[in-house]
Length: 356
Image (cartoon, rainbow, N blue to C red; front, side, top):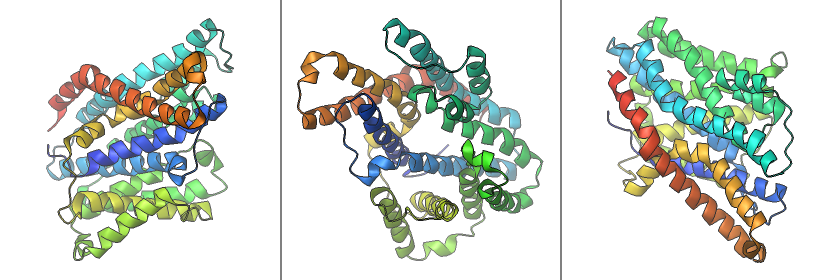
């Protein structure tokens, strides 16, 4: 299956923004020098939101195209999702639980554990890591799993829903779900949705844009190069300035949904022939899931080295900050590459057997 242009490099940059978001946080927590003086260091959450929009865009497009061919299988859909997400999810989950509950106590490094094993098992095995992270604050390695839980919860609902809906009604149903859920999320009655970050409207927004494109209802956006240029500039400014940190929050969320969805559409379908063909960036995009999942582990390891090795403790602040960045990025890319090549790829090859 042909991959849409420009989306793999986008995945890499989004995963990198998440890493940049967490690096100074752990550094300051451990008393190390840090730098977070640029807005890009504070856009990790927004990067995850764009991941959600992208996921909704790709998954709902895939389902819709399969329904048009009368070839959509719920079983195959779930098997493919399981083979892509579960192996790395449970590997990092197991490592995180071992790290905080066994490894740190063994090294006599204090870390408060305020949950029982049965609670960790229930919330994380049954795809509620966002609830687990909010209630127990179990540590960065485990807390990053919240976004994987949101995607899995979405998949559990969207696949059977779209399976039973006539293909002619998919756009209307998705649009109603987007609007209705957005209203519920920001209402005072359903504050629990905000407390545990059940931000499904980002995934719905990506899906709506995908169906509009499939129905050729966005062709009017392709008549001029001005529109995609404006969208790309606005997205760049979103991540590199504070201009869009306006209130109320629900209005900012609505704007973010629309901007991110149109940005992804512009990259994939309205790029005026501008495509990123750099093999290295495409590879980094292919391993972006690993970059996201392993970056907290590598960051903890790098910070540990700086705390324990005397030669690193004697460096000046600027050099320490630079080395923290370089070692964390290099280590994360290396581990993600190994994981993709020698672990994930085995399951990805199995996944292709369930593609129609």
